[in-house]
Image (cartoon, rainbow, N blue to C red; front, side, top):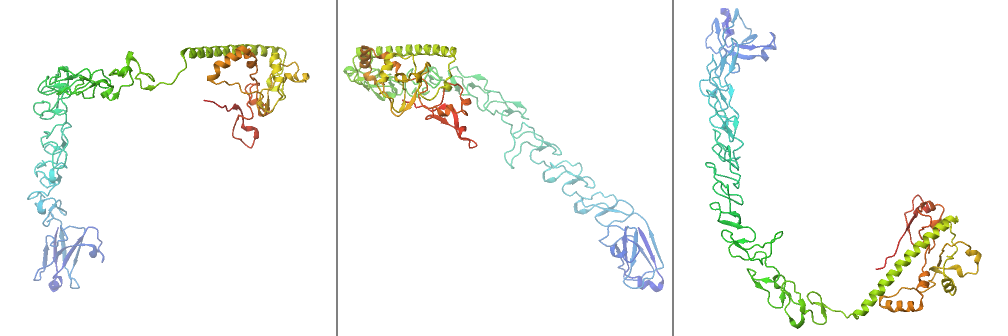
Length: 551
């Protein structure tokens, strides 16, 4: 923009020190100058009739451009004859360049903000992070310190783990990752600094042999060390059959032998008296000294397990002392057994260490065993007969429509089938209180007995007859006595059967449906009581009893 200001001769002095402001949006009113930008101030020392303004001289304005131009002077009033404004190529201040007739663009990406005012090409280098003729392109994020070539943007150097001219690629997956910030995974050309475990080659693109125990040489692929059982530069040769591992240079230079072997090449056998390794049948000994590692078998002692236990000792490490063998004969060094010589009097057992308890003669023991067997056989036969008779009695009862056990009243009734000797025996004793069997056949009230053959029991306070339990030590005399008296049958028939205690809760009308069988009840004194629910006193009933077990 070019401006010409003309004034009359008489107004020259008033125009002196004038100021030009521009605005792209301001209106031509009193508020306009306040929001406009100062472009030019007159600094001439002499007055002129014509002022030619070709550009701005104020730092606040980059270019002489705008929609509205304001002219003011510190001296009032302002006298102007003519103001002429011509649009032309903008002339930009230092640090700017022209992009149109009225617009200047800053060259703030050029080093020191210096550029050609017409083309905008930076006259020097670019600021850090930019490249190009006008330094308007960003360097790659992978450039170290954000520096790159001004001409083509190639990075001066790359950040760690990035490669390529523009540092926009990463190191290969075969490269060993860097361990800290001071190392790199690969160089700028992509060559790995170190290969991943199991890889080798210039680009770490080849695998080490499967026999290598991890790493191998990057250049030739030779294994650093071998896995167990392998040898050779590439660990592709087996150690000899007696080794579990060997030196990398020789298959016969063993560093560990298989169980049961020793020697530099593991070609010698350990002593057979070495204690076997768990899960095997062979012992393990030191590769150089042949010493048994896990100790000796029972009966053997010494580093190589070649010596027997001394007389009077046996077992593992020979720590056990022999028992009481006859004539102080040495026991077996393995088991401690006295063998055929046996134990001295008063001792017994495999090692003759158990004190012998006095015993009755063998023939007496045999007699007792025979008697016990006979009694057991008699009892079994009696039980079988009883069950058969009971089954027949039930069948007869059904045929005659006798009442079920649930309908049996609590007052006593008896088994009419009992033999007379039983009846006579019971008649001799009065009925007493307690929980015992009562046979009312001896009662004079025959109507009470009736024709029903059901066995009935009532509660009495004390047993009506003494206990018939017999101690084992008295069993044989007892059997002989009963045989002689011929009272076994009578005694057997005194055994109680049926319901022997009170069972009122079982017969309760509410509880009857809870019984699975009508003739099997839970006794009142030993029944299992459930927790009462909903205040119902009958809710605690279940057809189950506690029993007492004797040991």
